[in-house]
Amino acid sequence: MKKIKKLLPFVIGIAGGGAIGGLMAAKADTLPQLALAMALFFLSVYAQLILHEAGHLIAGLLSGYRFVSFRIGSLMLLKSGGRYRLARFKLAGTGGQCLMAPPPLRGSDYPNTLFHFGGSIMNMLWAILAAVMLITRGYSPWWVGTLAAGLFMAATNGIPLQISGIDNDGRNAIRSLKEEDVRLGFYRQLQVNAALSEGKRLREMPEEWFSCEAGQERERGFLRFQWMLDREEYARAYKYGQSLVSADLLGVNKALLENDLRCLSLLAGEALSEPGALLKQYQKAMADYPAILRGKYIFALLQEKDAEKANKYRKQFEKNLKTYPYPSDVQTDIALMALAARKHDNPSAPADEI
Image 1 (cartoon, rainbow, N blue to C red):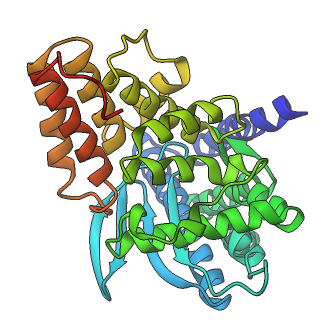
Image 2: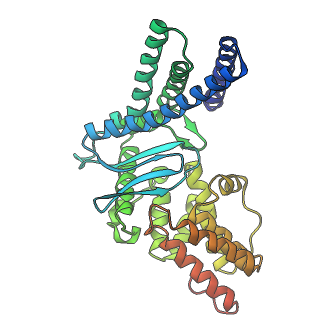
Image 3: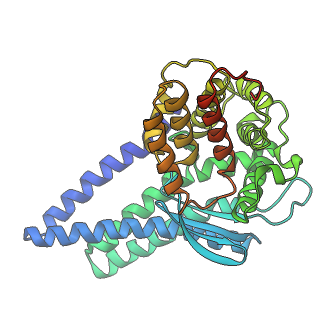
């Protein structure tokens, strides 16, 4: 069943894409007409992505949430200090994301179901409108695209699935309804993200936001590990991170955990083998992500002993900071790179900082 769920989006996409392509080819009399139809189709698909995130935004506002950021692709609109600014951020496995600060907890509960399903509801509403327009006005590549993309996004986001190691909206909603730990874990993530958007570091946030009891590792473990890193408690973070290796973390968190543990191992003077397949996948998909660049910098400097190569990664890291949405978040990376530079300059120094 799990394999079927993982393959479902790809099967739907291939089958739907083939059928739509055949329809457009049959309706177009000339090549320019087909090209125009395809352009309108892809524009309508992109519009549905924007509408999906807008659905989360509207659902959040109706539920008492406060706007934090709105991202399509890698372009993000962020609210910080009462002002809006543009930034760039990309998370593998997501085409966009709307993040909001949640309303106060009522015991262990807060409104979250509508927020999770808001995007799928918006996609479905537009798919219904597209169907009505096609029935009443006839063929239009714009409305065909709106219908197809709306149904596809409503299904692949509303039906509980895990895609590219990330839980989709439907899975988040169902698990939040059934499991208090999941519900509160998601709440803490939203709280932390809102605080980061206001320029706070993890170390400056309440410790209770990063609590993680046994069995809560999937939702809270990696966040607690990052909190330890930001506090520069490297030995403690390494020990705790090792305990998370076998935990059921989300794919992106599992890859970033390996990346961070490799950095700490190198700083402690240990030689490393090649990264695992999952980390390699995310190193490509999130090549500009600060922690990934920091990992490549430390590996090049301390294992490959290639200062020139390491410097290239550092320059790329510094260049990306100009448009990165959370400047306080990268202070951890900067501290680790500074420590690596000291280790490189004085390799005989004892590894007492790790």
